[in-house]
Image (spheres, rainbow, N blue to C red):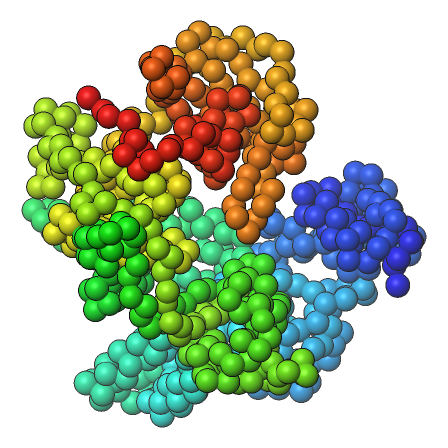
Length: 638
């Protein structure tokens, strides 16, 4: 409808207007979107007469005016509007049918409607906020006098069962609310995207149960309850409040809260001068790894590793003649939460494009047919057949949505790795001085594990590797608890070298902070001419000499996604590395280089050294010369 047209917008001149303009251009194809110069405020000042303006309605503002219109009669003061509404409410409590639409109008150009009865109404009252989320609610005086609390459009389905003030309900009414909430919970029992909704409804059920227990213990009858017509404020709980204590934009909220704290402090001082007031400690947000969900997931993985015997020393599952380690295949149940790019995409499309072993339609159909695939706990039906026709999935949808959990049962086969019978591990105990100075005191597990990682072995669990990882093999070799070894850094799977690990997160953070430092500062850099390499066609890549080290600034991009090969490219992600020469061995014509990645791109150091013309020895993927035999794989370290 708006494609190739010019759109004129009433605008307040804020950032939301710019976002709305971009949205209109992207969604409708409009060629131009123009705003009013000076915003709608200047427009209303220039055309104050309602007869001479094309403006209809009112402009919502975040102050005591509430809304502004085309003339002075349309400017609503919040307190005046509250008093006017109270007068109307007192007249219509028992005769709602006598109120016409004109009684609720504040001017001749009302474009809003009451959420409850759909009559014309355009006045937001500070006290009319949703009892669930505090969203402003448009409610006319007759409807506001008939409901104990308000519910916005998103929570309108809870208007019969969710209330903050439970003192105005009888025991039978509370029981009815409990039944309705439990019925709603059954419809959202599965799925992480319903997690917050389930939490909100369960909290309300707990409040109702507490109220029922109080009523049963005190034998409260209906005569002791407040009148149904009195509306309690969502914030302060009083029925005399006009919304100034909270409202939808916090009118005088700070002042009211300070006065309330002052009254509480005076009462405590007058009643007890010897006992100080007790204050609850402020709740501290737990880190991601300490939350209940993360802790339970870690415990489940540890039990799985123990039951499947995945944390064993490198000598287990290793062929003594060839040195190749191949763990036996096992049956596993793996799960993944829907990624952002999966949302709105069919399940079969995600499986075929994201999982290489399910790219064949026949294999995928076989997996679904045997019930090896589920979404949010519900088994997926045969969504794919040989004729490429689709059927519905359990839960009545084929489209993945946010927070959906996709789970699959599979036969787990790990790729082989080449490992020695025992991985060289040196334990370094941190001195008491280092612990006291850097860690704030002595620790029970102040030990650093320096591991000589073999080539072909990944540092931690990733992709198809589980048992054939450095951390799990060292845990089995050193008799550590599964998933207790923390790598302080990582090196690529095909790269061999020293890897520092520990079992204490504080030590890991300490080492990572020290490893991020480089001997010299970047201020000493002096740019030199850009160097081109035979391995790439980048025109933006460059390096700089900085006293005694080189800094490389060259983007890294994936050129072979299947094999994970990367190269320097103008289209790649920005990448920076620093290299310092430490030692040259004339006999082997090799050098020892100190490498410091400023950014963290995959294969960054290897790609940058290849671009400089000095690839890593034995890194055949990026131009390094292969080592002739296994015995000379590692350089002896003194």
